[in-house]
Length: 410
Image (cartoon, rainbow, N blue to C red):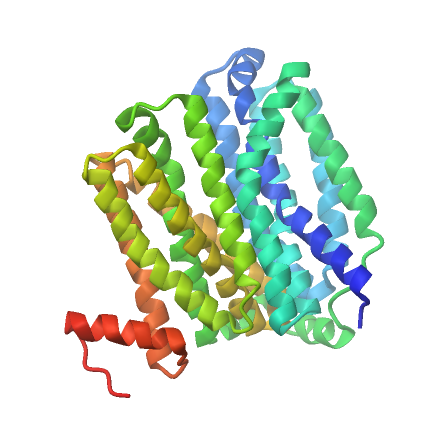
């Protein structure tokens, strides 16, 4: 059993580590024009570097997660961070955009260990309320990092060239690598032995047969899809529909990231994560309808932003609670479970993001957010009707009965 000091260090370290993929992906966004000029190439080629990084992060999780179940968490983490450092050093000196794209893929692949292993380590180390609190902090940092990273990149760019952003990543990853040597292996020898004797396919089948895990993964994925719909459409809605300046839009984007962090941290206050999940799902569907109503009512952007802010607090409740319940149901295969969770997040985000650009962006965004929120609501409702009752269930029962859609017996 670890003492409180070690627990605090582990939670904080894993919380910072989970933000490495987002930091790697977003820190260099302000330097896109400078990169296009440096490599003497088109904007689309520079955008390909971002796509390559995201693909690397998604695929890396599917490889590193199962490997961590077979060989423990510490060794894959150290190897991944070492590969990240070497790749970042090559990026700093590359002069060909084709090499830059390839290196960004490898960099994304390597840094994916931060996302998948941080969750796996916490799931292997803690359980119950301790796991919920640890994952709440983990998710809060993950929620803020996409907003924080471009700001850091912009500040660096005012004092240095684009290479300065990657030198910063090099320093951060070196600190992570040095710190990781002091970590204790979170996987037990028994669990590593069990997983080393079984194939990835067998472990995957076990997870796919775990109804509780799959349910929580889908809830997490559709809740994440709501956020990706917002990320893809918000620049156009705020800056074109509401005619806001890029600066004001950035401020509002940051506020919504804070809302996600608030919801994530609030989830740790619940002793029962099922209740946090139920409250989050109920609030998400209600606020998604309110959001759409404010969008088409002709009201000021202030009301639209207020609806977004409250909606993201409820959405923030869902992320750590669904993650806690998902990983808590399969701790022996926590690495693979975390990998599937993270990859599904990118998969759903990749599907929803282009959909909001079809036709009128106001209508397509509204449909995407409401439909994804409704699916989260129905998935949680289905779990409750199958036996996971709570105080919040009474609210669901009254709503459904009033709508007259189902007949629920006590």
